[in-house]
Image (cartoon, rainbow, N blue to C red):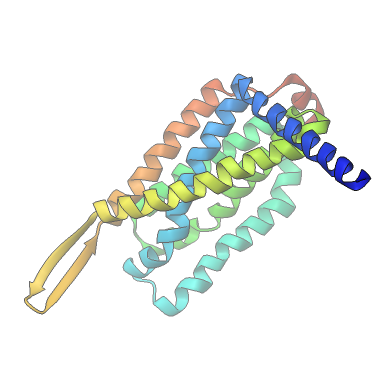
Length: 232
């Protein structure tokens, strides 16, 4: 019986912590951060779902696609290990997240241009820059603004809203946009060919992330205490 009561109390505490986490959305700057995180996560699905076929389309041999895409993971590791510890104490949370937000439209802009393929391949390590400076620093920001007793709940809220719902919506959006920019051509009575306009597809996340970057730079401010803590 005692165990049951203890468990029930723990569940109540966790529920209250999650409610308090929701209340953080009343903070204007935290709300801006959450909305932009949601949009950016949706646009991330364009990279995950479409980059492989896109690289083949612009002339990279299928056997080489996986190896070239690995450079994105290498960029992520190097950004995490080298650039983040170097820049976060100097620039602070706001400007590090801003760098991450700005990197997204740069990459999608290169994708939309689509040539030469070497330039597209060279832009793939930007994925690490985009991901670390936005999502990792974003989690640091969430920990900073959340009271200590609800930090885990705030991280859970962020994960559910952004990585969970955002990823699901983003996958559907990427598929819908791909269908929108795909034209079916009847080559012969026996052959039907689909022509995919990747430039049009990648202009969608390009414009969306440009808007996110502008909104973030204009409206978002980190709390004063994060600016102090970010000093070396």
